[in-house]
Image (tube, rainbow, N blue to C red; front, side, top):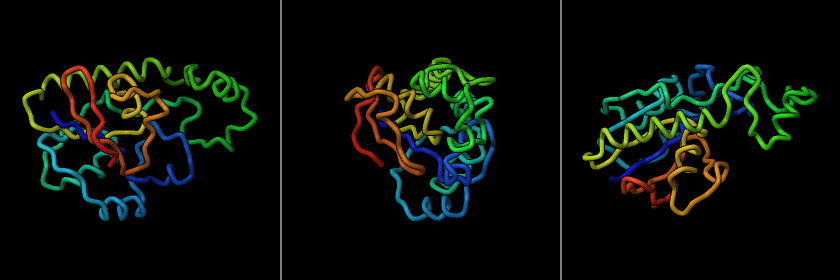
Length: 186
C-alpha cells in the first residue's frame, strides 16, 4: 500500500520558530500560497490530525476528499515551552536541562518524547490495519508525528531527527505491513 506523509503548511508560529504543539494555529498566508503552488500525489484515504493547520492543509491539497481525523496524530504537548521559541527560553534552567538531555526529558508540564512517539506509532498502526486494502493513504499531520512514525518503520532506517521535513513537504512510501520503504521526498 502506498503511504504519503505531508507536514502541515506554514503557520505564524513556524515562521517565528516557536514550539507549537497544542496551540490550534491556522496557516499563515505564506503557508497557504506555498501549498497552492505544489502538486501532490493523489490518495484514496485522507487522515489528519484534528488541528486546524492540518485540516486547512488537507482541504487545500485535496479539496474534494473526505477527511478522517485521529486525535492521536496531534503534535507533542510542549507544556511550559508551548508558544515560545529558543530565544525566549534561553536562560530557563528547565529548558537547558531538556536541551542537555538531547531532547529526551519530558517537557515540563507536557508530554514525554517517548509517550508522544508511542502514541503516534500506535495510531499509525491502527490506521494502516484499518485501511490495509486501500490503494493509498495520505497522512496530513505534524513534523513530530511524521518523524515518530518513520523512526519506527522507515527503510532505510534513520533516527527521529533524520526525518525532519519542511512545512508542506513529506515522504511518499510503500507500506508492506511492517516497513515503510521510502520512495521519494515530496
